[in-house]
Amino acid sequence: MPELPEVETTRRGLAPHLIDRRVTAAVLRRPDLRWPIAPEIAHELPGQRLTAVTRRAKYLLVEAQTGSALLHLGMSGSLRVLPAATPAGLHDHVDLALDSGRVLRFNDPRRFGCLLWQPVGTVHPLLADLGPEPLGPDFDGDHLWRRSRGRSAPVKAFLMDQSIVVGVGNIYAAEALFRAGIHPRRAAGRVSRARYAALADAVRTILAHAIARGGTTLRDFIAPDGAPGYFEQELFVYGRAGERCKVCGTALRAGDFGQRATVWCPHCQR
Ligand SMILES: [Zn+2]
Image 1 (cartoon, protein in one colour):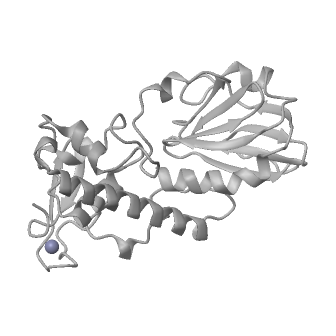
Image 2 (tube, rainbow, N blue to C red; image 1 turned 30 degrees about the vertical axis):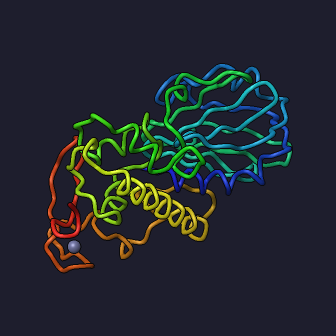
């Protein structure tokens, strides 16, 4: 599943090809993805000039004059910019044709992605209740500390709650908690302010690193499955159940809680 770093890398790859281009046509090869494709994509967007490509959580916003195409890549979606004559494949569901002679093509074999519309001056309901961006100015240890008081949920589930902070998926939560030395099952309300400062730093460091990696590995604007921003050998705990901790040599433990599998070091994480 594309995670925040892959979505951000996709945004950076797409932006130079879309900004200041006019959409000449929208080709919908099916009426729906996860949800029906917004009618504005076909009826309102063509003819408009694209002004920006932004990201909120794992949503991409291709901004035009009267609104934004709101995209989510779901489990298996990808976006590419291709010459207009490139034949469409089986899962190439949508093309936005551009006045550059290219198309922005949305491929999504499993169709958990979406293509919606956000009129200018409004916030789409999917974006309305999201927490701050982990790389933005509103996210820090104090934010986590304030929001966690009185909460008995495991800190890992708390960190993955999109109303607390967006875009910290399973892999990044597990790695950040290891880096901060916090046991993933510890009650969120019982983590100190100082340890939340370390956790917020770890989240930012790990995501920024993955985005930097993505910037060097992404090909053809395809956001692949998994976590391509990260090399397997850089992971300390994720996917390493039963192996030795790289720091202390203790056997890593694994468990399911908060409905997600997680791995931790019983010595390094308290
Ligand atoms: Zn350890």
